[in-house]
Image (cartoon, rainbow, N blue to C red):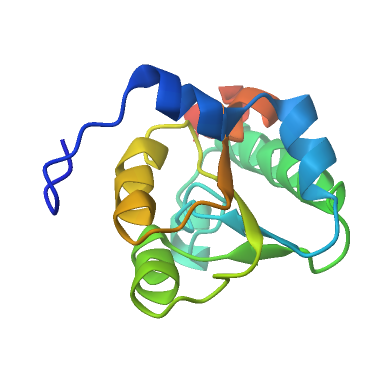
Length: 149
């Protein structure tokens, strides 16, 4: 249940807002849309030089593979089309400040675990023009490299 309004989002309503990769990718390439990556910096493969120095050679190779797959995937949407915002910033910008109010948003996380929580807040704010990537971006680029870091 939503903590703010006590409303329940049914599985049917949730499924209507989640798209498989091919449909998400095709629709997100349209005009007047915003693609929003809500993964945190670690889920995107970023880490400090000190953290990276502590990785084993095998982990560095996994990190390199993950970064390469991530970059390749994001480039499929077009140059500068993906907006990267943490879920907290997204919540503040979209829900509280009505940013992107007149655009259709295509939102993805790493594993599809944060989107239901976000859906409650979008619905509570009266925002209807949004879709999520079913099972997150990890379902597209794989999680093996990421999980081996």
